[in-house]
Length: 337
Image (cartoon, rainbow, N blue to C red; front, side, top):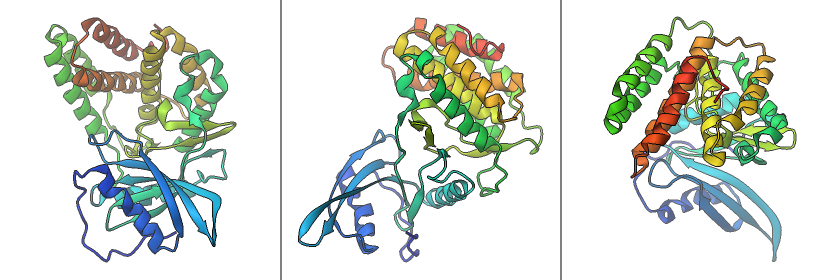
């Protein structure tokens, strides 16, 4: 399937009810010759808090009787210009060695509806890696697969669209944003947060463009799907050329936070993190300890800011626990309670 020509002016995504936009991909597919008899759908994103992501299941006509043949796909809406850049990026990445025939793969981006800024892609097979965080010790083989996928991404020699350049300044800005928010919510910790932010600013410095690799930007267990010995990774909206530590640190922090949310323990995630780091090391990418600690701490800070921004009741005890994890990451203690 190919993208339609830009025959109509670009339309900005409006805040419209889900039922008013859900028909748009179906209309496009019918125009492309798909004989769709019936379809079902469900929203995958938190509709109203970002661009819609919708899962579809299609049923096709088969002459006089209905066929059992079905096809599934995901449609994701973007703002003007951003969507086409993402489509081009995903095509380039998919064709650089992450096709569905590979054990380390990603969903195929198979169409872009230009006049509506909708990206259509296949569905990731299997279940989320996050499903195994209740018992991390039983998931070592799956964690190794996740580490191999990231190692493969970081060692790609492909050229990706230049618009997705290193965003180190954006990382520092995020630290400032979340640090300011948390200081207002928990003023007793303002001085400690200021020290953490200063440390992050000192370590997250883009020294040169050398040593940068393709980074996923949102590499965590809910974006990683495992089906047997096959891995498929989704959601590349934060992709950028950057330091490898950006992804590894993010995975560590998110894994530990998710494990704690499920088991009320950081200790249970230690084997998970250690297994990931050991397997990732086999990719040959050398990690800078100080930078890895900084990116892990930044991810903790981001999770803290996001969670406590939404929570009506600000639990200072939980905040203090999480802030301690942030500090430990800066101190290089990435797998310890």
